[in-house]
Length: 209
Image (cartoon, rainbow, N blue to C red; front, top):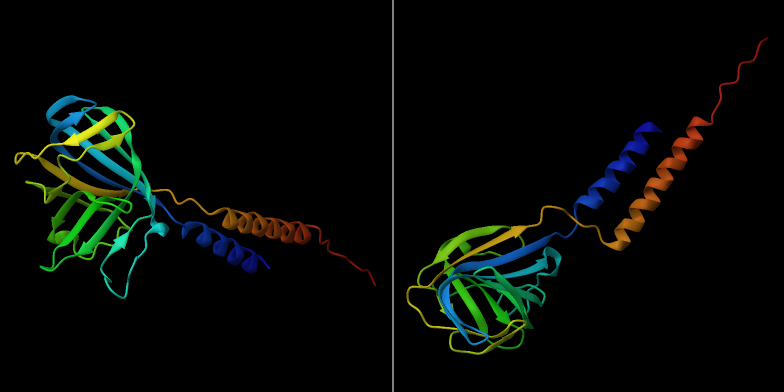
């Protein structure tokens, strides 16, 4: 009985461990541009998008099997410590390109890329785990001179050959079980507790001849 109980508990704990984790894709470097009409030059600029490892998908595996997308999400940014969000939703994506390198970037859903980083170390990266840091100097692609709508006003990035950016991806480190798995775990622990109570209620009966 004890072995059965501990086996059940181990199964429940392993189910809890194998859940999706939040993952954050970050592009950070020195860029020039304009925010709400105020120019900035070689300022510390970052873009970060948080998704879940289980929402990464291949949009067209038969046609482009090396392309991976995250689910659309809110893109956060900061310029010299002043933080805001983009009005449009963005995806992180990764794709192996013709020369064997891999390109990782951010793209507005149904529109143009914002920023791309290319490096051989990113080859085969599927957006589901840690990566980087990888630095591009100059940046492989930056959507410059295009007005971008944000919570802080219009953001425009300038074409600056001295700009650079560093890409990294990191996991939050704590798995978050889905609601259905929480229900299964709670029910399972209830069954284990019930089994322990029944076991404890058994009394030895001694008969004298």
